[in-house]
Structure formats: C-alpha cells, structure tokens
Length: 350
Image (cartoon, rainbow, N blue to C red; front, side, top):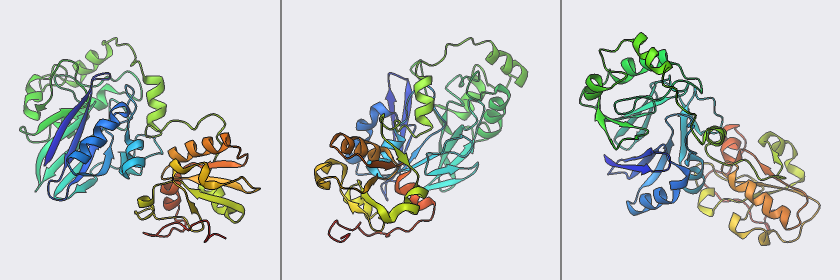
C-alpha cells in the first residue's frame, strides 16, 4: 500500500492518501478545501488516479474538498448513508467494501460524534493495514458529543465494538490531532486512551463527555452547510437552478450546453444527447450572441455550471439556468446518455 499522511494546520485536520501500488488507483480521506492544490499536485507527482474522495463524517471544523476533487479529477465522493447528505455519488452502508486494486476499504459505521461517522478499515489479503477513525477516536481521546447528533453512549459502543474489535496491532490514524501525535494502534488505545481505555465504563465515559464545556468550532456555521453539498458553494446570487426532471421534460425547446472538459464526456457519465460542448474556460465567447432559447448549462455535479450561468448572465444572456445535479444526477435518474462518446457539436445540433 502506498500511504501518505497530510496535515492542515488551520483546522488541525489530517488528510490521508492510500493507493494500490500496482494499479495506481487512489483514495483521499477527509480532504480539506484549502489544500486541494497540494493534494492534486501530489497525485500527479505520484502518477496516481483518484478513484474515491472519502469522508469520515460531515465535518464542522473545515470545508471538504471532495466536491472539487469530483469536478477536477472525476473522483467518486463517498459518505455514510446515515449522514443525511444528498450530494455524494455513493452513500455507504455499514460493512460495505470499496476496492482499489488489491486493497479493500471497509466502511464501519461508528456513530456517536455524529450520526454518520464511518471508520475506514483498509485491508490487503484480509489483513488490516490501517483504520482511519475520523473524529470517532483520536489519539488518547475522541470527538465531542455535544452537538450535531452527538451521543456519548453511541460513541462508546462504536469504539468498543467496531474499533477495539480489530487486532491490537492495527494502526490507528485519527481525523485530527492537537498535540503533535500522528498515529497509534488499537492495543495502545485500549490501554492508554484517557476517555475510552478498557477500564473506563460507559457511565464514566458519559460523565466525562458531559463535563467538557467546549466552545463551538469556529467554522461550524459555514462548514456544515457546505459539507452537506460536498464542499461545493451555493450558486452565486441571481443564478437560477433547475432540476434534471425539468430539463428532461422541456428539452425540446432548450439550448443544452455541457461545460465539462472533453475527456469527461468519454468517462462513465457519458454525454447528454443533443447537447453542445463548450468547456467553462471558453464561455461566454463560444456561445455567440443570445437568442430566444433558454440556455441550460450543466457539468458533472452543478459547481461549474453555476459559475458558467453567472458568466453568461454578465455577458447579456437573460435566459440562462444551471442544471443543479449535473450529469451525476442525470445518470442516477436513468436518463439517456451517450456512453463513452462526445456531445454533439453546434453544427450537428442544427
């Protein structure tokens, strides 16, 4: 397994890169939006293809980069089905396994800090190589349980049943650290964790958690809403979003414009029949003069298309909307797509 531990000093957040050394398929766990350029550059340097952008939970202390990684690299965003977010490409259930070449990544539901916490256990040949615990368990501590569906009793059970059940030698990699620690092991935390070691019972743990008296995370009011959208910002003021269902129903009278890059049209999401292809960087010039048709711009998941709609509106297009869920939701609804092909050019559209 190829492995890197990365750090964001502003939020004390660890991001983890794991990859299969033969296939060069990779996953990033808990990527931070402000560090996306660092992470993209590292993937390129190591000649890795990002397959998954994994989240251990809906974070309250930083904004994720998963949506940006989906837009830029085509990664599949992954979050727990219990997290209450509609943006991810894949909502994993307890025990579900993702694969990167020879590596298996098991999603273990470990709620308590939030409803949707997941510990990712990476295995090769059945042997656990690492457990990425997010905020469920930190080194010598754990995540707080006083907001965002927190429940001390559930967290205690999650750790003792779903993390401490792993072999003692299993390395533990937490979501944060505030004292300079980088990793531990299951056996070490059983003996030494100040809140969760084996000689501390559930009632004592609950009492500890009820008396922490912590201030709220500084970014909570920004981070939680953003992370429910995979870190993609709300559309700019004035941009109108429409659903895929509406586009499908009214397609005959619309001008459909795909603003993704050319190689994305040949990817697994395919291309929309009847759409023009003009990457975001070519707008507004590529569309020529406005006409009476409503322009529907779309991309992979709605981020770039919102920016495209804003640009076109500034250029004088008075009838322009953004398709909110992009080709990701279009495919999820089972609507027609040209698999592995390219969108039709303006000439072909007549």
